[in-house]
Image (cartoon, rainbow over all chains, first blue to last red; front, side, top):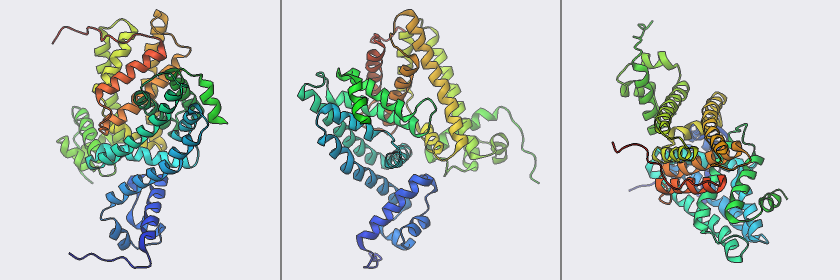
Length: 213
Length: 205
């Protein structure tokens, strides 16, 4: 078996550049419009090099989505709420991180929605999506468990409330993302805060206040 | 000039059903008019006569999907009097029917395409109006308590969508039963209502 070897000067940096270029193009144009040639051009690589790292277009796109979420999770989802002074403040940060806030948040959200669609259509992507939901669920449940353990929240099942929280974030977030006139980002925040506060027996203002502070 | 396509009115629903299937399987980008024609056992000119473009085909397929959903809802809610029973039944229908593939297509296209966004809004606002109506009705009978039926409808609609996405992509953590249970318990908290008993719908068929 022979494999074309990548030019040495490119190395793993080129792979990263290609993935970054792919995520940028997915976010700006939609996944169906992404062409290998444009990814290569944006990454300052040849199409041959793109094919060296990713045998098919689908593989490139799947890897780009996966990596983008893993990076986001490491940088923001885990670090932010963990550093919060209280579980309530941690949850307020979580609400903010999970909704499509302008800039980076929206960009990631576009990829998130694209991932749903790909996973709905392509069974081989479902395990990838399933893994992401699993980390997402663990992360949200951890934020809630902290408050249950400390007595800030009522004695709920953290996994159950995590499922509700994720459904809220996804359902509210997608409406805010597509600019539903009835669902401003502010309204999405408020509804998420009210619902979770009601489940956790806390004052919704404590969640809303911290998130906008 | 190509011959004028045979206009067969009976074909339109079949074309839409075929379009919904093919688009859900491959996505709009990889759907060719010819594929839809083949599935519907008709010709490409006939598909193009009715729908013109692929985008129009998608929105028409969604409207058809919505029409069928409305029919189903009307049929299943008809025999129910109490708003709490109606809301519970809506959750049952959504959980049974939760394949959001076409909606996901519409959502992603809405991000980049204004006419798609408009189509999405129309369908969504009708669904939201139905939820709001049921919640308002429950408020007047005293079964539900909420400050704002509209806010409650937004929250409930969001939870249904969020869970349906996970059911659609077969997240092992969210089964249809779990989707239903979360919808019911959230609505109970939200509306201070009791939705626990599934109403006796109809005699066993």
